[in-house]
Image (cartoon, rainbow, N blue to C red; front, side, top):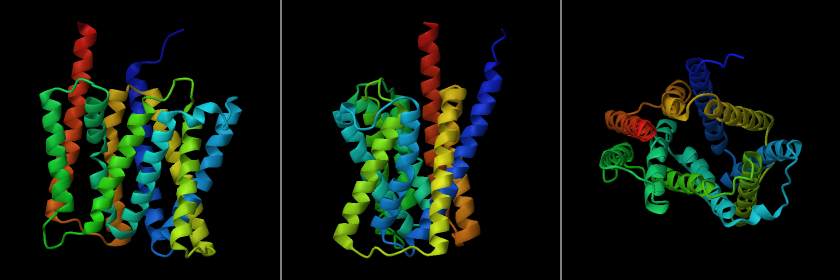
Length: 298
């Protein structure tokens, strides 16, 4: 039997990654619309409640339980905390910060994960990738513009999102291999729902959603779930080093949606900063790919 060409697999993976980023960008737009009128805790709660059953069902179809001992594994608990912090700050940022700004700063997450992997797990990161990380975070500063007249302190929420999601992704590396992606996702979304309930308990203000809000909520859940499926399929179809850089297309989709639907107009510093973040991230990917090729050749 003739194996499928790697080039064909990579092209399929790239297209799936582009689709995933477009789907996530639309989900972000829907959540931003919701954040205008609904309490943040209610959005976080509903997001968890809508997403968790999907992955619970997936886990059960694979013969995996949810109420099992592994749910209390330290790495799982740490990942859940990162998921909770990242989700809450992300929804809050969407409510207060332009969509393009949120998307631009989020592109620094791969760099933050690389830095965390070096500092926590001792993974080898050469001076070139450390330089790329530094340039990427310089780009972040240009996007949020601390100290400038137009500085929006709420943009710091996106940095908290990057930190929380980086903790989530780093902790996932320490989760035992016997634990499936569906289980991990279900536990994470359950934790998000619990956080949303806690936020509502503190702030109050929960109310019945309107028909339009319910439609937007279902749309956000549908696009988010489809995006999750697409990104999982992308990384399992093509080579990760080839497919992963196309994550940065989310910035283009998000900025475009912000311009079209929200009348956002990113300024020059934001665009330059976004370019630095994306450029440094792509360079870091290229260096990692070259390093792996060299190690395999050796």
